[in-house]
Length: 202
Image (tube, rainbow, N blue to C red; front, side):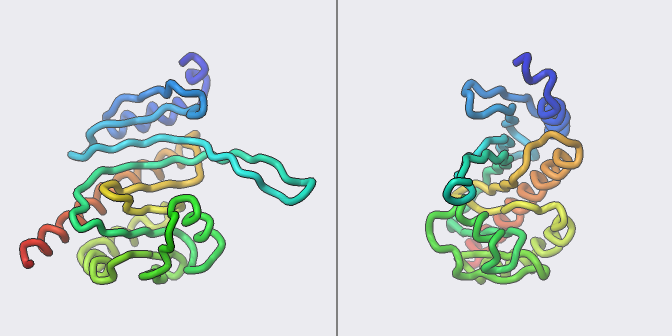
């Protein structure tokens, strides 16, 4: 743990833990070289953690292994109807969006894809669901936070996940992750409210 004490990552995670009012956890494995935070926040189980992904980049004799840092926020919620949804920067078909989707999705997610706010893409498996939650709070919520959404926010089974290629090692990064954590919690509430009203009307 001593190596973390001189690390700006620890300082930022310490401030993040204070914001979330949760303890810091330290990894027991070598591949995860950053602390994480897990517990109850705003009535939901959440987890914030950073990790590394190594990829071969370049071509032929210039091919080399490059390692990228990522940070994810997990927020648990009740996804009764198993809706799928993702919001990420980039227009449909753009390179940045394809790269994000290749990291997180194995199957085709292009159905139900649309442009949102000129330079963001929303993908879903249920257009009625997406339209309904956009009209009932999600659009206003996204408009408030969209400049901070630099990665992909998506539903993965019963978890809302935000993932960005970044390490929490500066104030502005930590503040953005705090904002995305709150956005994920509020999205969970919007979806659960929609689900409850949909079930009541069935």
